[in-house]
Amino acid sequence: MVKKIAIASLSRGILGEPFIKHELDIGLKRLESYGIQVQTTPSALKGLEYVAKHPEERAKDLLNALKDKSIDMILCAIGGDDTYRLLPYLFENDELKNAVQENKKIFLGFSDSTMNHFMLHKVGLNTFYGQSFLADVCELENEMLPYSKKFLEELLNTGKIDEITPSDVWYKARESYEPSQIGVKRPCFPNKGFELLQGKPTFSGKILGGCIETIFDMFDGTRYADSPSLCQKYGLFPSVEEWKGKILLLESSEEQTKPDLYKKMISTLKQTGIFSVISGVLVGKPFDEVYYDDYKKILVQEIANPNLPILYNVNIGHAAPKCIIPFGVEAQVDFNQQKIKFKN
Image (cartoon, rainbow, N blue to C red; front, side, top):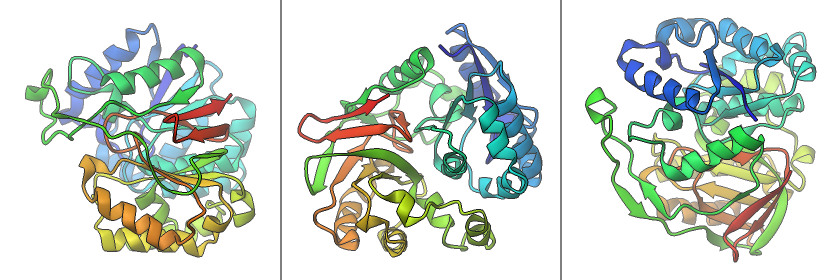
């Protein structure tokens, strides 16, 4: 049972901006309604400019939250695009490793927090992928989206996720997050369920991965020139040996990456050799279902390994609603039953 949550801005400092105060208030009230004590880390509310300029403070926030024995869960405020800059402050003197060894706890985030998941995986902490404070807890409807809420409550109450089934519906993203949108429902559409693009309908393994755009930043310096060199220096992306038997999770962001670039991203991953050693691929529903069919074709063509199972349209990551996927525990994927079960 989670009794105390620390909300951290490890990527982008938007949570501290005045124009988002109404969302912050909604989210805090929702978490506190569960009887949970909520605190923000020291730099979490200092705004976009301060957080961008001070990766060392963000790193300190994460380390201190990990060390604080009273905190049960670290919840990422939102994603962003430069949490890779925390690497030197977390790994140069084994700071992150030492902090994790002191006190294991729940870590939940998605999007650019993919980098944080890989950092924590490297030092042996199993994390949870798929939701964030602003994107999910602070939902402007009168309640959290029911499917997202179900998984968050399961994690808060039990500290684990037992199984995932598809959502019956999906929601279009909001065009505005102004206070006028409080209580306004999102457009909603029927969801197709999991799709098996190729391979056996059942497969198993421990899951690791995240946002494909962020993973691509580990290898490509277009967004940040020093991102690949820093990720390589600290060995952030696991070796092919470490990927053996794992399931790769890929989900795409609100950037709605064009098919040509998506193809380049899959091709870059293929060059690492992981598609010849993993046991399967889970792919999240594309944001607002943009390029839904294009991505399917690219995955099959670029991976070019028809025996590798690819399960598509999982409600995870940037598309709403979102489940929560535990990393580092054995998962059993069953397309026929439309279930992913976890051996906790």
